[in-house]
Each structure stands twice: as structure tokens, then as C-alpha cells.
Image: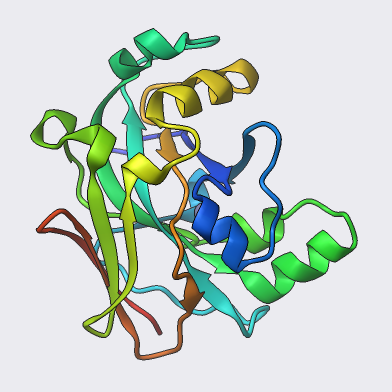
Length: 209
Ligand code: ZN
């Protein structure tokens, strides 16, 4: 058996779609706000998601995911496109009840966002297959449309996200960036099936246990 040691991080941007910030009554931040999920949060396409015992309100947040393809720090927006070749769709699972408690106390969100299985990623595709600046994506729960987004509605576009994030965190090959969720986030229950699409293409399916 060959062991592959693989370290990576998942950088997420908060409140990158106005309508989503509004639905949670969150003010828009003056500058980009990031948080990180560790590699143990990764739930690959096809695996089941188990609702953790510490939450009664797990929310889905469908987000376009970028896969970083080279190392970079202080990347200028005009060169940011050179730092990713593939995109996917994923879910930033959030223990909303726990997050609200932590926010109220002024504590970091980490436990509500970075727990095991909290970062779903689908299959990755060549970014050149898509028109990145006006990309449609959506999430269905049990076949019903729950979230519809278009990357044209992002406050920080992919280039700006990479530029801003790389001021704080060195981007390494294999890192993922979750680029924010549009309106329509909601709760999952055991037995639900979430399916994600970019344009017409199915990107992932996750069953909730
Ligand atoms: Zn999110």
C-alpha cells in the first residue's frame, strides 16, 4: 500500500453575495472576510454526510470551488487566473445554531464551519469549459431547486478573492477556495439528497444521514 501524505487547506470567503448576507441579516463587510477549513473537513463527491451530534441546524451553502494549481503570495488580481485551472461546485456545510452562538459571544466560527465533513467538493472540471464571469450554478434538495446563483453577482470575483486571500495566506498547489454562497441556504435533515449543478452539468450528489 502506498501512503500519500497530502496537506491542503480550504479557504472560504464569507458574505460574497449580497442577497445571502441579507437573508441572514448580516451587514456587508468593508473588506473581504475569510475563514479556513482544514483538510479533515473535506468530504469527497459520493460520500454520505452525517449530521454531527453537536448541531440541530446544519445548513447547506452551495459554492463554486477553485483548485489552486501553483504556489502564490500577494498575487495581483490581473495574474490570479494563472493560479487555478479547475473548478467545481461544493457545499460549505455550517452548523448554523452553533455559529449563531459563537457569533453572539464574539468568538471565532471555526467549530461551526470547519468540522469533519463540512466541505463537500464535486468533480473538478477544466475552467475553460465555462464562462467564469457569468457562470450559473444551482443546488437541488430532493429534486427541488433551493439555491440558484450566478458568479456575476459576487461582490469579490475570483481574481479579487485570490488577490485578497493571498495577502494573508500563502496559496499552495491543491488548496481549495470556496467562493461564497448565493441566497436560499437552508437546513438539511437525515434522508435528504443534495445535488449540485454548474450550468446543466451535474457536479455532485450527497446523501444526508
Ligand atoms: Zn459559505
